[in-house]
Image (cartoon, rainbow, N blue to C red; front, side, top):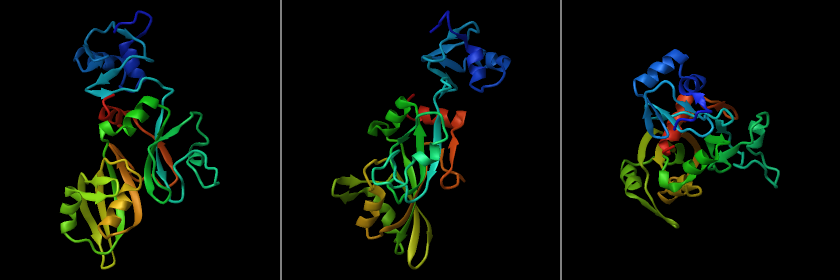
Length: 244
């Protein structure tokens, strides 16, 4: 792992926001750092920040400052593409002032609002999108009608759709009126319109759908149409969730 032409590890850690070089030396000495999967305690180790895989307390550090991942609160009416031949509003308008060439991770249909991740890190994007990692996604859905208590069991047991059975990972009733219900569902399915089709099948068509979480990343109070760059700990958690 030692690269004689590289940068001292404590300097790399300090540059990644872990604290002063002295504080980073203590982190290394305590055995909290691994480089390419190997625990490191020596302070003289040098690494190449462009290629080294560094974890602190099991959390991956993104050492390449050219890589960026942002969260977008996608408004309704925007299609999940950077360019649309039909002239509909696209994601490009929200990142037009950024110097990086960003692409979106997954999609939300035009009328679905909420959290959409955008990045220029191809490896991270590929892993987040790959079914083998099963990244859970949380949605807040407003549906027609007053849902019954048995719906939770039905959704967890599985609902047969035209392209196979769908099971939710978690479900809870948030609010209800005589005409509508608000429910939260968690699932790792990536099929098109899966949440809308799921509730349509059980007799509660969706009237509004908001994605509030992707893996460990939460939408929080980010306003519609606004973006924010993921912080070091958020990004580290996201990378760790897909075994990076």
